[in-house]
Length: 288
Length: 350
Ligand SMILES: Cc1cc2nc3c(=O)[nH]c(=O)nc-3n(C[C@H](O)[C@H](O)[C@H](O)COP(=O)(O)OP(=O)(O)OC[C@H]3O[C@@H](n4cnc5c(N)ncnc54)[C@H](O)[C@@H]3O)c2cc1C
Ligand SMILES: Nc1ncnc2c1ncn2[C@@H]1O[C@H](COP(=O)(O)O)[C@@H](O)[C@H]1O
Image 1 (cartoon, each protein chain N blue to C red):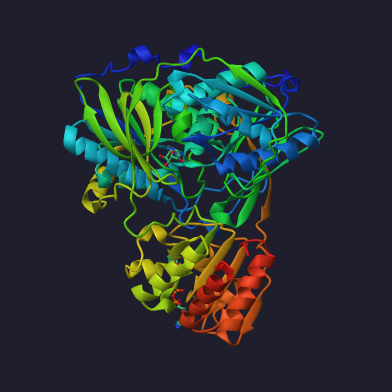
Image 2: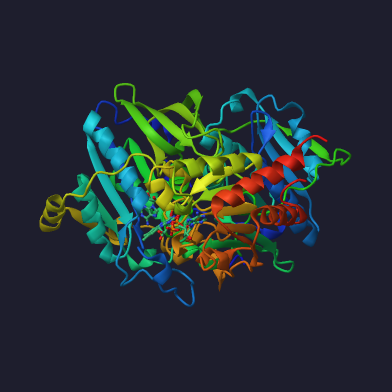
């Protein structure tokens, strides 16, 4: 276990150098209701499906780009995805990222969030050991787990914070002030963390800038998206993909719509109002 | 079992060493979150199926009598840590404290309410234990033979329910959406064991809390749509801000909140964070009341899990009546005025 942990003694090792922000992004399936499931693993079949950038990852990338606009440095996106993922990574460069990496290998297929986060965390550790920030989306629209940011933080033994809306970097001290919004409590909290730190960005913040088609085409022509396979990463096949995944989808079923009573009242509004209130009281959902 | 090759990053687990169902009990400002209390109720049900105890885990500073509450709601035992270092919630510190307790006591199931903080905490705990986790479950069951937790969650846009299991690892972790299970009754005569644990082996905090600010919401003093038990929803049929105002009055009289269709938020009659539907919020209140809402599929997507759906619409052919438990065919003004009157006369002190 020790080998995979970046000790916190490394914290701030990049101080004084340029700000390096890693933005892991996911290929989301655009029309989630029209996809095929693998009959054995019950996983989403992503091969041959047009992929797009998970919408909330654009807010995450925007957050990273705003920091870059203010403090300089570079923004690198990466994604574990099938080979067709190159295209949506070119979109991240179109938005303003400097480089992009596609992590792709058959051995990574069928991963749950533990195995995906392992692969992503180990790639970051290997390729960008001196990073300051990892910025992720709040969740993905096709799996909606919000697991990855905390799991990547756990693999790297680093602090982390969700629902971030704003950040202020102090490169000299190697710290970042982070404001986050807890929607269900209606509060903003402000923290100060030593970098490196992992954050996920609140999905209703940092409205993303447009994708420049020119930059996107440039990215394609100059091959700015690089592929990384397990030949380079050398991760233990037991720790990635389906074999590295503790959870299994045991069964799937159609969500049954809740049967409705469909009792309709037509007539005098006062009678209608009484009828409705009486029924709601009978249901025990409002107090007499 | 031991012949199965596993990732060397993972500790070997002997499943039979893991016993009991745990609920992480979240609290803030001296109040326990409803989602946590509801989970104690569900945990009781799971635990009695396999004959084990329910333990509630509490973490914080100056907890006082709050540690007794989980017992009143059905826990057999409370295990808590009260330490100044925990006076501020720092996610990886809280998570590490929970990991240490799990390593000491070895429960087979650990449940979190899927609040914003719960969703932040649970995956770090699971990952550090190299265990599996399922997010945002809407139901749970336990297989009495294998003791595998059946973790049910809607997936792929909500049309499919996935049953997820973690057959080879322990503990089994899940976060569970608030309000899918009822809150058990509070019974102060219940007795249980209360164990104080101490804090050790924590990572460096590497972070501090500088401040907290509550938001005053511009639109009204009503709670957000995803938090309320009763949501009155304005559709285009209420024809303007005045109509929305009348519905806010109704929402208040019923102790609920106000939401809107996309047409209503696009028109600026309500702020966008009150939009309900596929591209807005998904809600599952006890009561949804749609007023002047036609029932477009994109809207229905966000309300279909509501316990009771009420529709008020002047058009008897409005699609929303197909999804409604109770419908009133009427002009919205007359119906809502009448409802307000009935409620007023009901609540007048006699
Ligand atoms: C990609 C996409 C995403 C979308 N996402 C969402 C979403 O997240 N949420 C959402 O809500 N919509 C969404 N929509 C829009 C959706 O398709 C509908 O247009 C919208 O929900 C209709 O809103 P409405 O019911 O308020 O208005 P209408 O469809 O115009 O219905 C008004 C209703 O009011 C009734 N009415 C009129 N006058 C009265 C009166 N005096 N008294 C009582 N009733 C009256 C009418 O009979 C009618 O049924 C989306 C659409 C698309 C294409
Ligand atoms: N396959 C992946 N590759 C890179 N980053 C990912 C991947 N999946 C998820 N993420 C990141 O993790 C965030 C949360 O995703 P999730 O935990 O799947 O809801 C996303 O918004 C992305 O930033």
